[in-house]
Image 1 (tube, rainbow, N blue to C red):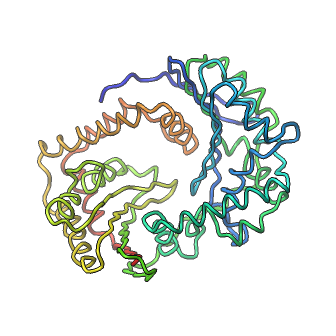
Image 2 (cartoon, rainbow, N blue to C red; image 1 turned 45 degrees about the vertical axis):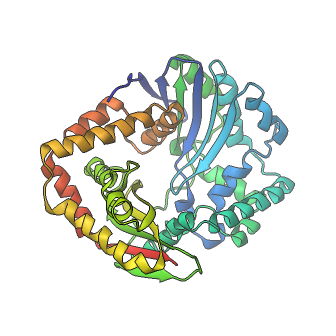
Image 3 (tube, helix red, strand yellow; image 1 turned 90 degrees about the horizontal axis):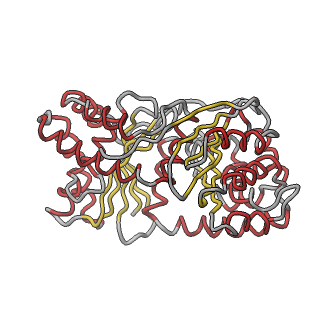
Length: 411
């Protein structure tokens, strides 16, 4: 797995904010704050969509800056300011040419400590988010993942989607946003990350000034381990001309010792390569689907391996049976060392392409430190994957094959 390892330095500011610095020579740099707060932390139905709403509206003005200033601060030097929300995190980050870290760091610090969420600006952004909700619902191949979570995690805060609904988004006001910022955007609940050519000393000094006002702690986490629904095969009639199906098997989370073997198994089953087992079985040999893919979603305390495919209504039963048979085939017979080595080589090549993306590497580094993991490393990842034996791999495949599948179809 080719690639130059980047020197990593981790430190903690006096207020408890962790900082991770990856030295990367070059003309660009990336920095940002990852907060351990996402849609999973919205425990009341009235607040569903709040984390995502705050992520959108945190750019709409602070106690010292207008939204116009915020919008142009990085763009005026050819940089970008961005943010995203997941089930467990909110990340605000900037990308720019080298030499602009002080500007970016100071701006992010102001956003997370001084944003005021002006009423008029929130009203405008609600329309944008409602359009985003409509757009998402119009795409069954995307919305099925949310519908699947609603089924699998029913009654738990992981069940509702990140965007919320039009009703909840319409009801969120400025005070609710400010309270979320105060309670969740705290030093002990966040990690500041940097990847670029600046020295650790310079980055730490900038961050110390920019985040001095970040409070140490807020409300304690209320996360609980979800209880999954019983194995189910559910079909929802939404009038679609095609069946969209998602099949899921529960797996361990970010800290599971089997996570690398499970990810390798998912890649063999339905990774991006045309030679994935399910692509060969469903598309290349039988022409039953246009696309099929397998992926793992790893959270801090749980996870799910999912298989998605779209097919004609008349082929649904046949496709579902083939997926189940393929899962069983992966577990029944131990792969030879030679065959497994070939799959590892392909997977490692794909990972190398991902780690070569500096922006994604910076974001992944922040998330890893936030959850107490080692920052992503080409060398360490290669060593772990190459160490997976045929029996280790079969053990992970057996877990997947024996897991009671939850299946949802939108048809």
